[in-house]
Amino acid sequence: MTTTAHSPNTSHAADSGLTVRRLGHHIGAEITGADLSTPPAPDLVEKIRGLLNEHKALIFKESGVSTNEQQADFAASFGPLTTAHPTVRFDGPDSKNILPVDSESSVANKWHTDVTFVINPPQASTLRAVTLPEYGGETLIANAAAAYAGLPEELRNFADSLWAVHSNESDYVRPDTVTSEAERSYQKQFVSSSFATAHPVVRVHPLTGERGLFIGAFAQRLKILGVTSEESLDILRIFQRHVTRPEYVVRVAWEPGQLVLFDNRITQHYAIDNYGRAPRTLKRVTVAGDIPRSVDGRSSYSLEGDSSDYSPVVEIE
Image 1 (cartoon, rainbow, N blue to C red):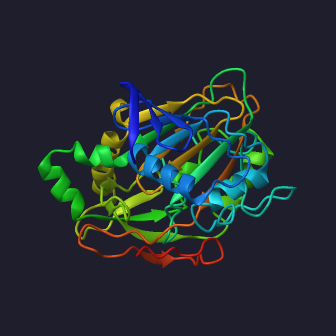
Image 2 (cartoon, rainbow, N blue to C red):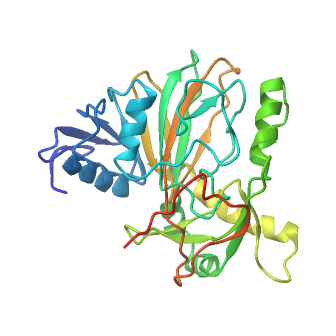
């Protein structure tokens, strides 16, 4: 991709009409000049994919996307869609691909990568704000590749050798307090079917070749013989603290008309619970992904649960 620099942090993607403003050295770019109310042409999809590979998280200002159908059509430009969720079901007008992220039923205020408890987690996620609180409710997104690169060499080598078990039976759905029947119902649905998958702690991105720490809230324990559960969690916590260092994080302050696209293969995210549980609703659409591979080329494998109804497997050439 060729760009013409206009300031140290702003550029124009050649021939696309997009203006790109970098939000941090390691992650995040704000995109203006994109009307995504209709599916983007293939050349624009290619440019957006290149920007996503570079910046990991893209914030489209005044995207033009205002309906579920428009959001789903945009997401589908990058590959087949998953259904809304492997276990949680919603009644209502939303399509089968739309997951309402509603403060009435759940608060995702734990660092996680979407749906890593299945064998092929989504490659990318889109989020669109529908109802916003008067203050707060931001989303943090972290670059797991920068976190890996920032580790001392000895820790990188150690991480390369590790595998972790990811499960939907996690603290992600166990907030400190449950205040409503909607929260209880959501939690019950979330664990209504059991899923567990073994993933490499270091995942190789299939398009860029970058290595990233592939852990988060669903990573419950390491697959190391002779290591206790407590020691396993301690090791995971060491790596997790590196992922969430402030320099690797971008903070998304939600505005009407925004659409956010992030690479789910090499990021984690966190919804800040700082809005007094005022109404806050986002809509999420995820793009089906490939099966993760380790640095030595081994593939993730399922331990429990069949997610084929949730997501097709994308093959990467």
